[in-house]
Image 1: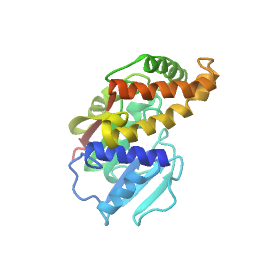
Image 2: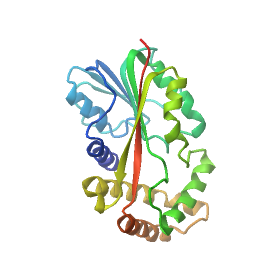
Image 3: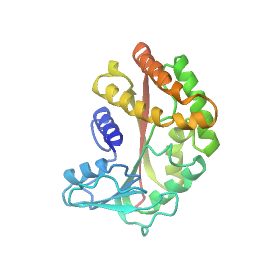
Image 4: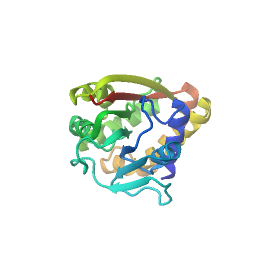
Length: 250
């Protein structure tokens, strides 16, 4: 939860806002894959009259603002909502949790539950893609790419590049895309420091997957993370996030 909150505030500072879709004050909002719930909490504070539904397989943080409601469900199954319900549907950074083959159907479901005239916003990063890559990152990318391929998760930039097309295919109009740079490392100020911490926790949690495939010994993961963090600073590494918005025809 702490990592997801840190990630949320890094993206908020990098983007300058919690969303880019040109929405009117919404009455009903869906955050699909809500994580800790902090994005939805912020929307509740911004729009006190709105109801925000955070859907995830875990309940998120227990202390919630008025107007925030948790629904425990797996978004890889059909969403448990009627058609045309939500004024605004938001989904962010699920590339590591949604199999590559499931993405078009998921986007169709997100559009289905949006009301006519409502907006859908998708935000995804390109996994393992950085503007400058050193030896440690090359090594990590080999391990992570192989692990992702074994479980059907996108380890390329296919999801990152396809969000626009999937929204169009699901019937959305006025589709726009904005890419925001995300520095990684203390060289990048507050955003870079928060992103480096986010990556540190993620990389540490992946060690057992690499060890299971005999790609690297568990005790070597710590050394690899340290080498990566040195590369962030030496090379001034950045990645990015794409925010794609579309409106359901009215």
